[in-house]
Amino acid sequence: MRKKIVAGNWKMNMNLEEGLSFAKTINQYFDEKPSQKTEVILCTPYIHLNGVSEIVKKGKVALGAQNCASEDSGAFTGEISAGMIKSTGAQYVIIGHSERRTYYHENDALLNKKTLLAVNNGLKVIFCCGEVKEERESGKHLDVVRRQLQDGLFSLSGSDMSKIVIAYEPVWAIGTGLTATPEQAQDMHHYIRGLVKEKYGREIAEDLTILYGGSCKPSNAAEIFSKPDVDGGLIGGASLKKEDFVAIVEAI
Ligand code: PEP
Image (cartoon, rainbow, N blue to C red; front, side, top):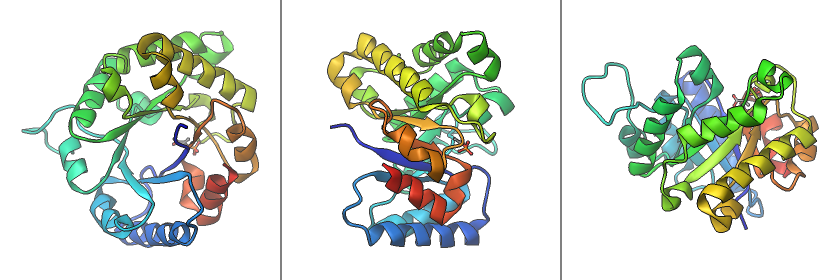
């Protein structure tokens, strides 16, 4: 049975004190819910990683970063490597978020490099893909996502692929209040699983967790998560409020 996951992407929100206090609240909540089987991941800004790692160490909540460098080490001022992220105790890193693709011009080749570095440094990767509004409207969304996966991800070996979580995030739904319909999410997730099956075989495809992301909230989460190929969510805005985030996790 593949893993159900809800990951919160804090983006560039909360100072150190606010982030640690929020992580404590979330960690405590899920520690008191031993029956909760969904994996909960907090993807924090870099500055929170070490502190949040201490907070969640003995609990059930996992920790991730939102990006990593495309080089292993050296003279890259301001960058944070996959190895450094791993050394904080984090287990995950988000790669290929649409905000990185758009604002920092990260292309498929660069994302492929980052993904390989992350996996080689012992991190699991939440690899994001998704089309913009014009691509959906012109019926190119399947081709766009296929190219993102082929060029960004499919150079991985089968055993490395088992360390990947794919997040389908239609760009037109991120932070906009617009959400893909449960049918649109299911169709794309089914398509993605099919591509992975073609490349890596049935077992790896069936074990792959595919998350939906894009204006997921307590009022729409249960319906989206009820689809057979939707294995959870990557949550932005709603991950910053305890009540909303918890309700989304519990919607699974
Ligand atoms: C995200 O940042 O990955 C995301 C899905 O954001 P939001 O939930 O705010 O649309």
